[in-house]
Image (cartoon, rainbow, N blue to C red; front, top):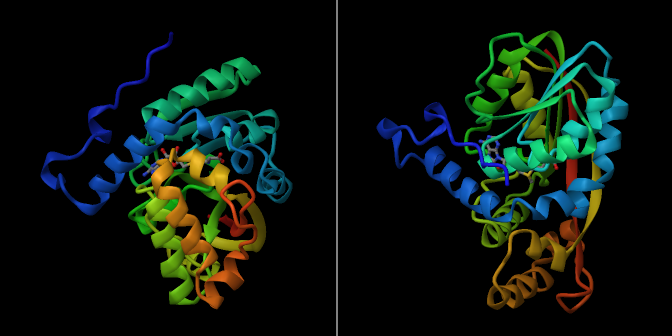
Length: 277
Ligand SMILES: C[S@@+](CC[C@H](N)C(=O)[O-])C[C@H]1O[C@@H](n2cnc3c(N)ncnc32)[C@H](O)[C@@H]1O
């Protein structure tokens, strides 16, 4: 059996800032995703979500490009781009995810994919190193989203492309608060979802010029959503009840239907942004 990579010192909790919000979030994240890594290899919305093909279509990757995938998890986004670029560096904060992405790359014969532990908020790469940076369905786990975007801008070549996909919320505090609180009760490593407008503004502030934005609804099965993070059986009825009994504004956004854990579905909204440095 291959070994889980060890966390280098520069990615561990900094003793000087131990206990800070960001370090605590990272420890929680490693625990959550370390324990549930295998679920993300098969998760339908991650492995087959429509945003994968759409990203490739919008980005128009070139054969000579060096690409970086941030928060790669099981590697789905890295592998979607691998056949079209020269090299992909697939990175994640969680050692078990890096190990999983590496073994899946080898199994799939993606010999231009290498894996590396990396914190999105403090990337271990030189300035102007990549032609493409991708990050899909992960930034809602980052405590310092500005630091993440500033790192993306730093490691991109001038003219390089940034492609972001994340779950977004409407510009309505009631709905946004419900979504974050409900997600945190499923997955304590969830920090916050932004609106598409907030993402676009923050990209701009980081020196990334937004070239394209769009949203798409994705259907979620309650059962699979809870399984991905191994939610204990006793916590599931309340999570479902809170969804089905939510306020009209929340229900209009999440569009829940069904009544049992097995048949309940709802919709999340993915925001997609392509920007250039
Ligand atoms: C839902 S998964 C990402 C899915 C993946 N990008 C895809 O397209 O299938 C979220 C990932 O974010 C990673 N993550 C969370 N915080 C991170 C950080 N600060 N830096 C890098 N990765 C992080 C987690 O370890 C986890 O693997």
